[in-house]
Picture 1 (tube, one colour):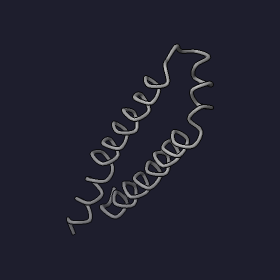
Picture 2 (cartoon, one colour; picture 1 turned 90 degrees about the vertical axis):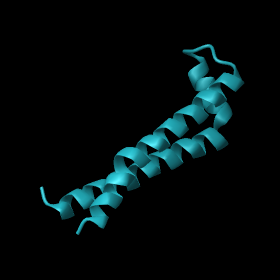
Picture 3 (cartoon, rainbow, N blue to C red; picture 1 turned 30 degrees about the horizontal axis):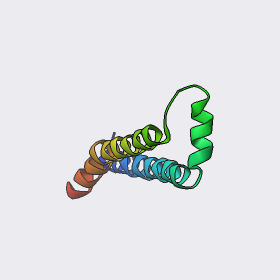
Picture 4 (cartoon, rainbow, N blue to C red; picture 1 turned 60 degrees about the vertical axis):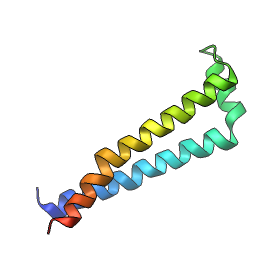
Length: 80
């Protein structure tokens, strides 16, 4: 695998993962009650617990994107 291929791979992984993150955040902000009702069918969670799980999940996912996609992409662009 060439460096150019790896650069493209990590760049597209970053773009796709940030799209998923944005979609998750938009659902959590604008369709909060619907999500709580949907997940409330299977799990007993208060609204506060549900909000904390969403914020925690979004945070962990964002850190994962930065560590496993964005940093390698930047490193490959710095190495010529």
